Length: 89
Picture (tube, rainbow, N blue to C red):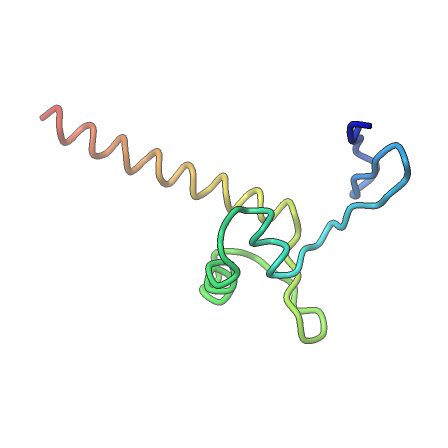
């Protein structure tokens, strides 16, 4: 049975009422983002990836992880455009 998601308030739930977590720990965020846990922790410590310190653990909100990936993609596209413009000159 395919996972049919719908947005409800702030959390995503499927038709079987299984609540998907809004916040991710470093290991889960790394898996979600397709990077290493070390990369996620370094991004948090440098201040470019927002995270909540809840108890002894960091929690990264899914929307912050998505925004970070969008920002990195835009940064890469701008860098490529800059190189392209230099090659044309």
